[in-house]
Length: 446
Image 1 (cartoon, one colour):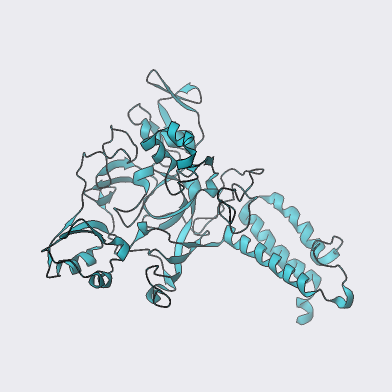
Image 2 (cartoon, rainbow, N blue to C red; image 1 turned 90 degrees about the vertical axis):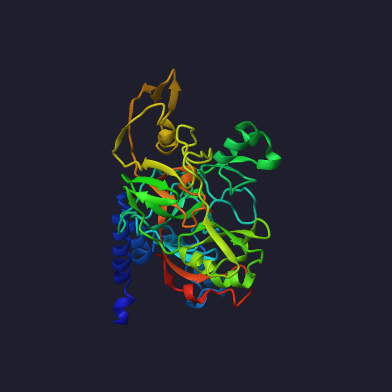
């Protein structure tokens, strides 16, 4: 048996088969040329591929340094391959998904659930997203090779209520001094001229390819073809209330009889210190789930608990599609149909704000409006057919989430993967070992 396992033809057959299966999955058969390299590595051995090793070292053994280099190179290649095509580690940086996902959760994101994307920029530094370590703005990638969007076969498609990791749709342009803010939000609120000229405040303005835009994690509320509407904070999909999710929370104004609520009591209920905001001596603002509301209402010094709700018609100009023709806000929004690949819609001046970014940015057409006539690629257009599917993403922390209500649709080419498994969870407000959330370790994402 040992003789078979060490036989060079057997090794070539096993590695060649695995490689061929990967090429079939990739659906790019030019890569079959790589079988010649594998054949030479295991059978003919004419080319010295491992150039960092001595070909015939004295005594047949490599030095310890070379062995370490060999191990590191193998580990980097293997980990990069796994991260690119199978699974990637991710951490929750903000409270936008609380209480379903908590700040400090470390999780694995499955690339195979929806099919891994072929990298737009394959020439990049390993294990780094968009900026080189120990630098402020140095890109970690080269744009010498840029691939068009293509996704390999996956186990399924994005479904309603999946927890999804995706590239931030408005992350194509970034103000380097305010990378946590949308560039387009900054332009709406400060003006394009100031954002570009005031480098001390906003920094340089840079562009990034799709796969190097920031990673966000939200829950998929609407899939292609769904009609979404929000009424007084309640999400409706195709006129049906969204399936209840235990972790969803809203902001509540809590009024007491003048006696403040004990901080330890709030922490026991599950309201972190960073979420404890006081208006005055008797009123407080807490993001809470239904279960937490019931516990707060039982406290003897609490006189009322009222959910925050922005009334319908009270337009927030930072809410998509940023037009007074659609006077929507975070609590009252829509109805809005999620675009579907192959679907054709009538285009008008009134509904153009909804589809403008899809046509111009996501699907790469030249869009102009002259004398109330819409031109796409220089031709007058009254209709448009979508080239991609789109999705609607929202955070479970409904009043504390920068999501599709603020920047619109998520194109299919921005989808990274599905959040599936929490392997570690640390509470930033506590010290070791009390900071370990033992109940969340090795749990699945719902």
